[in-house]
Image 1 (cartoon, each protein chain N blue to C red):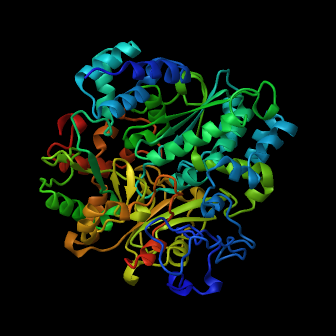
Image 2: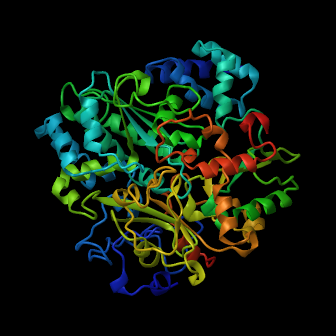
Image 3: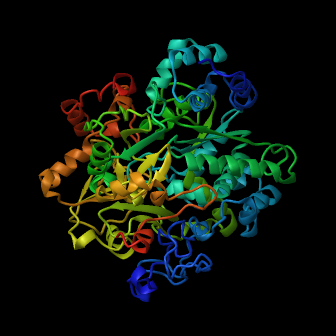
Length: 187
Length: 448
């Protein structure tokens, strides 16, 4: 699927003037393309290369460096479980194992890849620190924060995700965890 | 739930900090529990000094945390926002601003602890055009203070940036924020839009003719190494984020963004600046450790009872941080190990908890060894506790050292000047990574 003309215009109008070189528009352009298409295909790299006067392989080389640029289709909800030490100490690996079990996905320790359910609804992968260590184990769903999702909360989390969201549209961020844990009788 | 249950400490132990939940934080739905009404007015930060705190101790950087709409420009203006900028534009020359910042002894809050005044002065001596890059790629495991600061007080950051731009004569500034922090990105874009509408960004800012600054936000896309300043600039320029060899340093021609002299500052460093202007360099220099003074946003996580964000004077002891502020260890366990500045640092044993947590201490012997600097991260801490199922502390430590993103870091040239932000600063960690390579884990997203 080719990129829309609106996107190309937007890059030219809004992104190029911000930077001294055309090349510096690459990261924003890749983000816009991913927002539009969900993932980045080889054709997308060709088009972006054309837009920014770059070689498509060059575009791909940059995109492949960054873990958030998806190079294959991803499920509707991308569930990422932080497995860095503060979360891991709070048993986040077990959380992800149980999520995978519940969604009947293969659980692999480590790695970067994700597994997608057959209906394309969920994808699950481990991630690096998402800077929400006070909500450990922290989970991001489509880059929105959820937590703490302890292993015993997984069932609840998958059926009623919004209960775990700690930042919502139109509301101020909630800070810290102990307050909330105590409030909800979970700590 | 009563207030006593929520905060079991006696009033004399009451820290003069915003507890991470913020007592006045309006409960996010569906969390409205009996006893915590949405209308509950936010209590003012406790004025008396807590243990080891100067009296009176008043948090400044986290003051907006209790305000539900602290991120709105009207709220920021109502609590004296952009006054420091107006004062600077009205009565100070750029060189005076740099002098005040130097006198305050403000050091970079990102971890390396480089004096901010020196960095600004060095850049101001180099030819124009110059750039300001804000390092908001907070990615060290255990650090999350910047995220909260940007969420709650994005205009505090913008004001600090504008003062820097005035002092160093910069017309284009960039904020590089990590891709995972989508909320922070939205907040910053919103704040920038508001600032343009109020004439606080763009041309002739705040009525000062000839003072023009544009601010752009760039999103990262998941690369731990972008927390390192040269890697960050590579990423901003649209390349793979591989650190550059220094010299030339970013402040010099050829070393910075687009080859131009560049100031790279951490979010918290810049947020300190308006307070320094408003309250004076002496106020700032008088807080905490005289070698690296000022208020500091400490983040603490791991096996503590109350992980969260605590604003304290630089140099608070580890013991106070854990037991007085973070509510002690979970289930009263003994502290086995502490990672004082997140993963780029050496792990400290739990035997000496009286060390002051500040840049001046942690970047010098005996906490500095030849393996690499014991950086301070962004003030992040986390505690390890013995976990028998993983073979005790050794297992936990090894697990801690297991880097999955090393394929991004490994591209470092050998003999490169290592920054506190480099995971590769730890040879043991690299060795370990080679031995425990995960199937499919090496090549990054290409080879999953």
